[in-house]
Length: 81
Length: 162
Image (tube, rainbow over all chains, first blue to last red; front, side, top):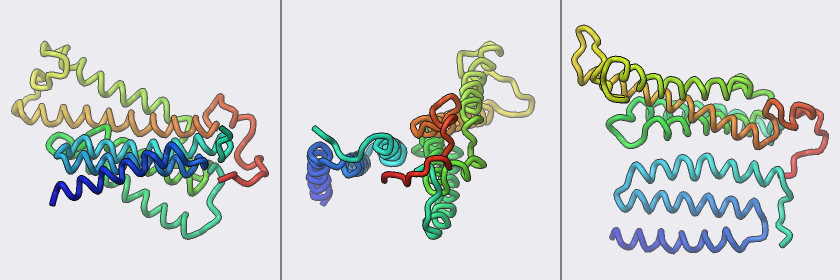
């Protein structure tokens, strides 16, 4: 049962990573990167590293996601290249 | 992002939610020495509560939380508590951050270590919380010496882009 959860999490990790790199809207890219980080935190917890997963969830999904949005707020919303 | 949110629901809910997040942050700091988490994670949670209020109440309204001017001095104070606890143990003849070396009359050594770790965690939490808030204010251009000092938040007539 545990391997099934991890397989779903790995697929979600791949999906959000590809989405964060390929999407044109920078705000959607920041949201996808935050989702990637939170999936990574869930994977850490499923592997037994509670402390690492907790740090990843708090810093990656909580603080860095807001910093990404603040950085997008300072620039244009859509990428040009 | 620097202006207050127009929705009353968002402001009221985020006010209640920020207190819950900060309460959990204090819980994580206090239980840092025997459960997952610690000063860094608890400080990041405390900063998350402040940043949530910065985003919803607006920059000016949320100055009562952690004001921009006080952020960097408080971060320095946290770092001072962290390093100073280690230097105090050094002064009593122990190693750096060897809390058991501090002789407190009537208190056994494990209890001294317990409160020494708690003091260090508190210093880390204070430093991390205020430093993250200072970084967020700096990214918005609102920090003292930044662009925001010459162009206050209410004078930007254009609505925020996002």
